[in-house]
Image 1 (cartoon, rainbow, N blue to C red):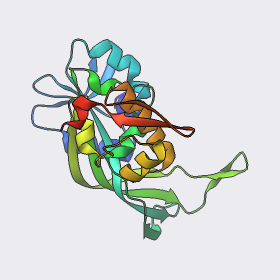
Image 2: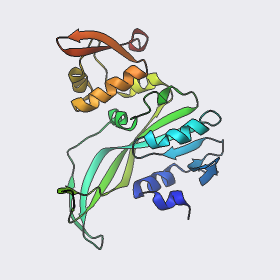
Image 3: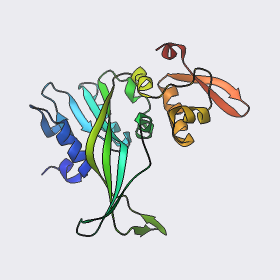
Length: 229
């Protein structure tokens, strides 16, 4: 079994199997990196369940000479499942949290202009997942911690992002007038902290621009070329 397989979690493994097509090769070494799937047409496919930051060295080396696809799952629906030490289900409840494509801004940490590369496709997969946790939580530095593990239940939707403008099309409509990050949060239906990340990354992609201030709050607005969509 390869190093890549040994390190992958159940969600990663399930998505890799779900994505596999006839002619694909799994866990292939390309240059000095292991690649999740290599398509028959040569496209390199990486399933990334967390931040894209760790992919930086791999992308730096491979993107100039290979077509690549990063597949990122977002739990649009989630169930919290508690299990005992034998894996038997003790309790299950539906999480009220609903997530959408806006969650991608968490993953783009450190690589805000990633969507601007012509050899790269980012595919967001909206999923139904079980988040499986143990019956008891471990204590770390006086705080309870249980990262659990994500398990795929169903793929609900696939969204391909081939260029920066595709990101705007995949989000709820942004305000037509200049907006604060708090107003952006309301438009995207997300926490203000995530809206702040979104504003930073949208500026880096030149999809929005600075628009002065309202009081002490910085303002942003859609760039003219992007707003005519």
